[in-house]
Length: 586
Image (cartoon, rainbow, N blue to C red):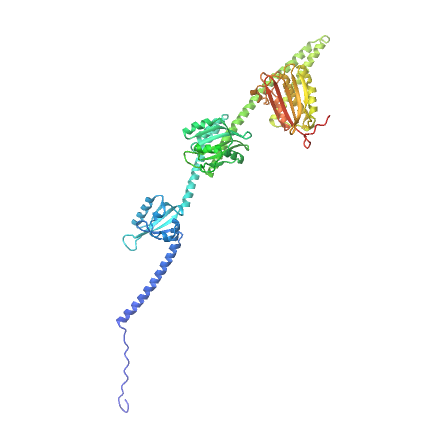
């Protein structure tokens, strides 16, 4: 109020309250912003999922009801060997060659009708190769009742399957090996002397468990030949052909030679499209053999034979993993042959011992009887009238004693040769002088037999590096043997001539000769010609061979029935000397 007048207060301004429409607009804006944010996150998530899907190392496909490819990642495209852009819309079965298309279709049907993942195994071949996969599929429903597609993962288990297959092969191989060893081991003790029967039994165990064909050959490396002693096949029609090969002497082919040289089993496969091989190789291929192993049979480091295991009508193939088992079979075959050889040698040694005892008992008894009878006659002779007769009896006693001493020395030498204890003292010797000394010492025997004993030296003979006493012993044995079979009026000749690495001696006669079937046995211990020569123990030529071979020389014989025989031997020359130079005169 002014001057008593009344003044009113100013009226306050009224604020407007938000309307319902304003609240609705704000919620809408917020909702739209939230939607945009969620859409952005969804897109980011989808992009992230797509990146993971595309770059996943496991092949993924999204398949329709007809197995058409709706989606595929890079690994899936690589699995079928195609670019990803070229396979969308294609049916999976048109891109690969399924080993069992019905099994794959059944798998998809189960996946579309199942609420849980379905797993099966599928094998197929594509441009990328053949694979075996563990297939896991799950239906895509997208909130609908019926599934619209099927997402399928292909997990490659090819290497796992190969490893499982190799493991099964190893298990089967080891089972076969143990079964074979269990069945074959008793065969080695069935017969100690019939090795061919043992080898036949081994072949029966091998075929058809380890091979369609089993053959065993004994080889002669020096001659380059092999003798087939066993040939067995699973096919009866093939067996008739194999029987014709048994006992035949054949050349050593390339595959056998490789096994002999390396002393290891050799695996071979026949390929008719390969470059032409040798005739043996082609023969094996034409006979139906497709894969085989040649394993050497080794005894004390020496190859005595080969074992051949072959696959034919069964279409089975050998691998390098089969080589140890083949070597084991070959070892058992070699053991059977060696066992029989040792048994035969032991039997021969026992027989030789018994023969030796018989010879000693017979010959020594004769000499002792001569000594006894001569002694009795001397004891009965008077001191005057029987002196001349007594001298003859004393000479008989002396000859018998000398012969007994020679027999004992011969037995001793033969025993040392047999046991490898025989030794010689070598030094330079004049071959001419040795031959002349032999003639001088052996002339009384030749004169008593009314046989001429001559000597012949051809050319300039180098000195020999030998034991002179032992060489004279060889000449004495050869000449003594010749005198026994040369009739009165005949001739025995000692010849000396140069040899490529030393000197060659020979003793020839004009006797009855030695039949061809006996000639191969003349240097064997206790061998004696038929008819048996008087005074022979069958050791002379055996000892002569031992002496010559101890020197490093060689001895051999040549004979013609009704014409005569010639025994020759070589001795080495003096080391360092010119073998063409003559021996110095003495």
